[in-house]
View 1: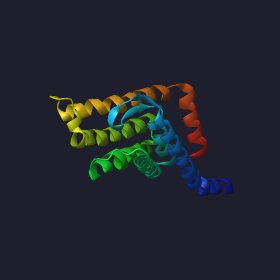
View 2: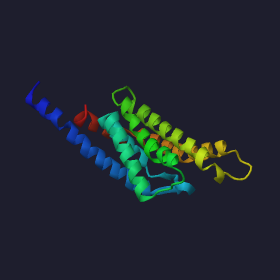
View 3: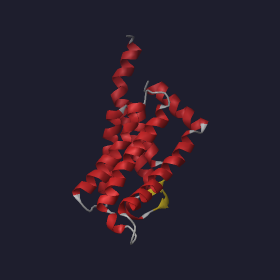
View 4: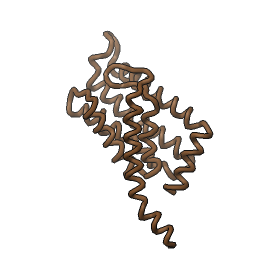
Length: 186
């Protein structure tokens, strides 16, 4: 192994630590820009889930999960919606942690897209479960809480997911992400 390769490998944890911190901060700030605000904490934001999933895509699932959980805890501290302890676990720790699942696909063909879809599906499942278990009483009268939770969460998580996939398909965005990964995290 050459000296350059050894130095690059030795710096990888530092790159990942700094990148995950920056992406977590970016995701948090983007989460404050609500395109479509909704009640009870959910809103379509300015691509906040993309920034969070890129931590896993660039650095792998361990870094992605840690970054996602840290982001969830930051959201819990700054803008909490707390009903029950298990709801906190589902809505903040597990749901945001799932965004790091993108790292499981970082070295696969179409890993950027598949990883993003798996990450937001994981977040959706946690939020959906929390929605009907803990927020079901907020469903309109006569509406099944499971159906209400599904519609509520698919609208904001799925809505942002579709918008993000459209942006990811734009050649300048896609090519920049691929280039950054190849240059710094291959």
